[in-house]
Figure 1 (cartoon, rainbow, N blue to C red):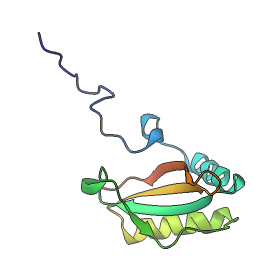
Figure 2: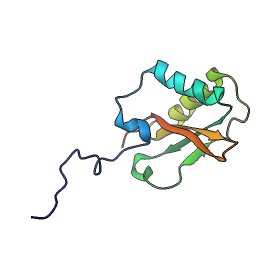
Figure 3: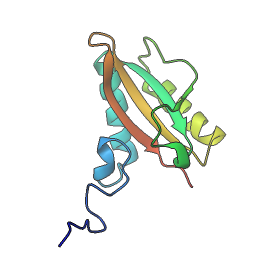
Figure 4: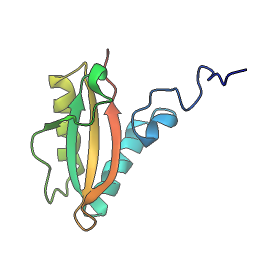
Length: 114
């Protein structure tokens, strides 16, 4: 009998980033994650992609990364501006770690319709 995957199996479920396995985050939990990025000294950046292209390697960057940003409200305002401009796109926040030259954090803040 051949191996068959069942629907809902973690290997067949389309997921977006690590947090997609968890229940949706509240606004306060999202703010906590953004605050963590800032507290670590990481550079916040915002990307967006249409759901049909979300599994591609590259998403479109929203403006330039926020080098040296220390204000949570500025990052939140830009996330919301990106979501307003592209309401049917997924919008994610990245935290670039300058020391390790890698992403320290990435998660989808707004899931698009598609």
